[in-house]
Length: 477
Image (cartoon, helix red, strand yellow):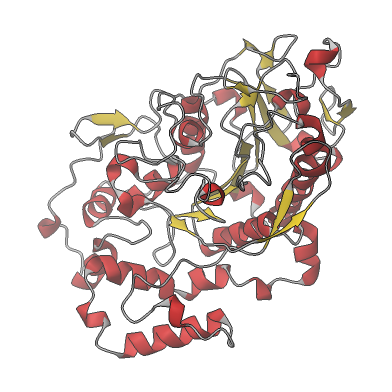
């Protein structure tokens, strides 16, 4: 298997000092190190697959597959739940009645119904890295965690030079729970044992909340706002606390970068800061977050909320050349539980989660398609686990990593494909079980990355980036 842990000697590679300095530093938000740039260049390759970019929409909490994409209308009432199936644009496939707009996309999509593992934790570690053996209940990202897809993209130098290799929107997973769990940073989108220099660029958000009426003790809230560029406090003279709130943030950032670039402060930056400054000062990065460039009709199409705004920014980042963007439907304290619905599962799905998804997903797919980007952009929708077949006494479904789903469209997956089936209660795969490693290996393959490529762990031992997963050949066009 390919091993990228031992790069060649840079002294013999014949690159200009300017080029080496441009890619040589560690990035504040991730980026390619000099050794890895040289190794890729020396090998005469940069990974290229049918997908140039991936947008991953993570339904944090564990979406109930049997209430969305794998209904069992003939099962007993305590199994089948409250929703009815409807036909889709793919003959013979039915999905939930609350997803009518998504139903018209199914002839163009791949639906995997048989994802299974044993990692019972509310974080996307397994599904973003392919590693299924993390610590159950883990609430913080650790240096010993494996790197995610975005980190590997950056390690291998995918994407444009002036934008991050990976971006996480609208905030790091767990941000919305920090009041309840101080210090929480749910594992998943990190560089892990490759180092924090391969973390994604995490956007910031300051949402307000609009309550949505729903039966049950917990009413969901709709976060309103937009993802923002990261704080500038880490760069000299760029403290965001000193920004004049009477002027637009973008105008002030432009002015700060111009004054900083004209000063001798840039000369005093180390390579770490220099790379960070380069990315933040890049108009391509900053423009992607400027939603004033979007029409009102486009904002209305996605929905004027934090997730709609985040997916618009995700599309803009893809246009700018970012290879991996993850958008996480966050859990916000006790006011909204994303998809972790141990109580009031059907009310939360009916009043909030499914109407939201049924607006966001078609808006993103249609938008990419209209811009000619869908064939080169893989859109993936999934959660970290499924929900239990049996409805509990509080009209909820409990944790169930034994069975879940993944929706994929664009970027080189087959159209009109349903892969895997489950038993009559949607509790376990009946055919073609798929591991998180298989899903991750498939994404790597579509990006043109060999999933058997190895990277060094902390002790130097090589480990395959998909952790034994194999591409699902049946879903690849």
